[in-house]
Image (cartoon, rainbow, N blue to C red; front, side, top):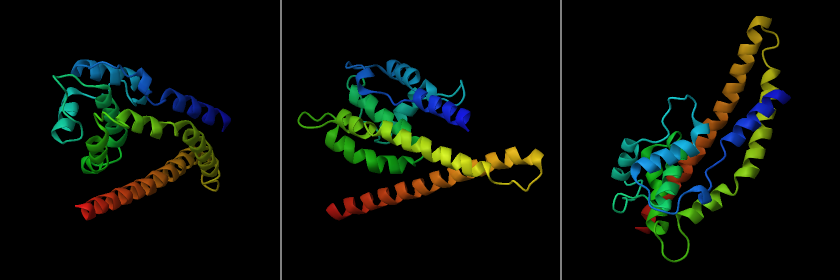
Length: 197
């Protein structure tokens, strides 16, 4: 158990979020953006051949109004921050849902000359990361312990696989419920936006 949690903690630390101070303050061309994202998010790859972000993806995000158009083919720090949000959301949410939550942010905060901008939004959200990671680690440890106590009356040669299956099911159920909650909140935001119109 301790070895499992230590390995998990090491993995979580390697997936540390991209800090805004690490994003260049100058405009980047498309190739520079994809290289930056590949370098910064390499620990998130499951397989070596996985692509973090491609030119086609970025162009599609711009076409679908997820990402404001670059200025003279250069992407600002706020573009990179917006791409980071898209990256984190894309494996969980539909393009439509991502538009629903990022659209109002980019409309109001992208390129804002007064007050707050996309970098401020990103920093506010990810300042919660350390505390949330610690809570997550404890919750996963608890689920792992529960899973190891399942299937004890099954043949011994099947127990390890079945206990891992039990662990996967608990984690999947957790993700499933959270995804449903996220979608419900997004639907509420869409309704509230319609009421304003």
